Image (cartoon, rainbow, N blue to C red; front, side):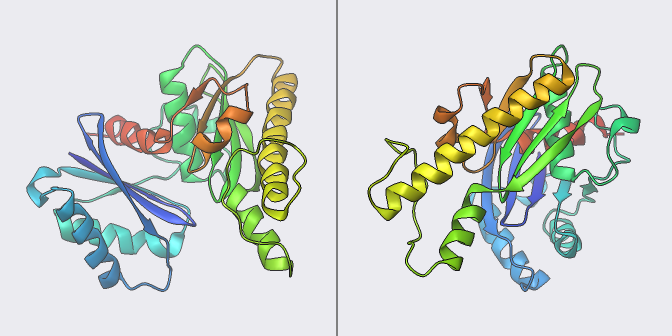
Amino acid sequence: MLVAADIGNTNIVLAIFDDGRFVNSWRVYTDAKKTSDEYFVVFNALFREGGVKAGDVSSAIISSVVPNLTRSVEKNLRRLFSVSPLIITHDVETGLVKDSIPAELGSDLLCNLSYAHNQHPDKDVLVVDFGTALTLSAVDKEGKVVGCSIAPGLVTAVNALFGSTAQLPQVELKVPEKAMGRDSQTSIRAGIMMGYAGLVESMIKRTEEEMATELYVIATGGLSQTISPLIPRINELNPYHTLCGLDLIARLNRS
């Protein structure tokens, strides 16, 4: 079995894959103040409750956009499973054209594009990731990384609105019935959900114009299932797309 760890700004997602098959996953709140020992207790409890034994795991891989936590997670996976995790960098094999990968492209986006190209090698693909940040990244059918765009994520936008205003409430994000609300909660839902749907649709259109091609659009990330009904251009919804990219890269780099 493979343990995959996706260290994000909001959550650390731990997943188990068995010969390329997704088995289970868990989310742990990202907290840079936690010690390595505190994370060990949490990880150990989650894996134990999930029935994952040390002898079941033969390899591990880590994608991280929080450098301060990378070594802590690596240390704990070594401690739990006696494995040496592969840490994703631009030097690992991804199935993409290495010379086309931007120097500052995050490892999570590298996973997204690697898996997108692997699954759809005959298509130009755009991956929309609804995470802490909203990212849209593109790869062409030759495996060349076109680039990416980044905006605040939906929850980030809501939190900024809530934290900067005196009278607007914190709201649950769900699809609104109308574009114009008549109370604060429905008004915020309409503005955020429909506004971001329009943003994504516009960026898809602009990227297609720049690339002079029709894109195959994949949505992933925490709120992808919630907002996808508002975005007709989405061709595929896969909440585990990034994790599958981790598993793919692990398999591509086995010696």
